[in-house]
Length: 278
Image (cartoon, rainbow, N blue to C red):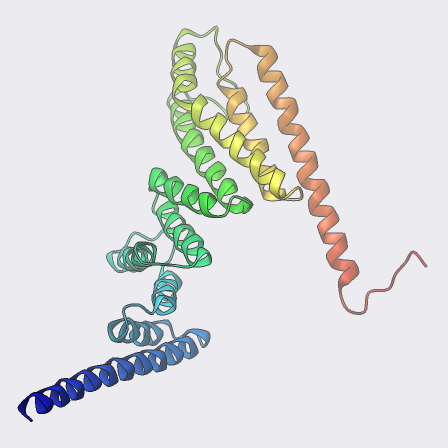
């Protein structure tokens, strides 16, 4: 009898625990749904409270973590370095990282990696941003956006130091570094060593983005900028400089052409548009 009583007691305890876990999961789902409703109505702080309760009740509820991270991103203002704003970014990164450390779906892994990269990019943590954009590309190699984003980072990383050095020399925007000027040649040679690998990576990344999305006009615009970056540090090779400037001009033309085609297509698809070809 005593043995039977003990077994019945253990069974009752196990059932109670299972019931409690089941209730927590249901409550977590309820908090997730309330959070989604608040999020849709742009009540982000209220949404965060609901999503936090959801993950506390059910830490395995990955969708709640994704929404929690996204809600923090919605509160983040790029370019503002206030403690509260940086805290929102870091808390979003923390939740994305927890998703990556769990067992996310392919889509959740891509979106978490891109989310971290976006925040790192805006906080000027360029190496970290590229790391996570590459992670997203590893998971989904057919997505052109991470390749484009790496190209943008590489342009920023090469453009800023070049402009700082030009400002020190007092050069006007239309003036190139002159290899016949001793001081300018020293600066140009140093920039070439520092920037050329970054420039080439940027060109390669943007080219890959265009291969995946041939009408990616933003990638075309940055290819123009990257070739101009390379032209400006090709101080001793005038032929190479001219070729890069020619290529840059080509991408300007292509950007304008594609933007015009997209605008015409959007106009023709607008309601009430009259087909003038008939």
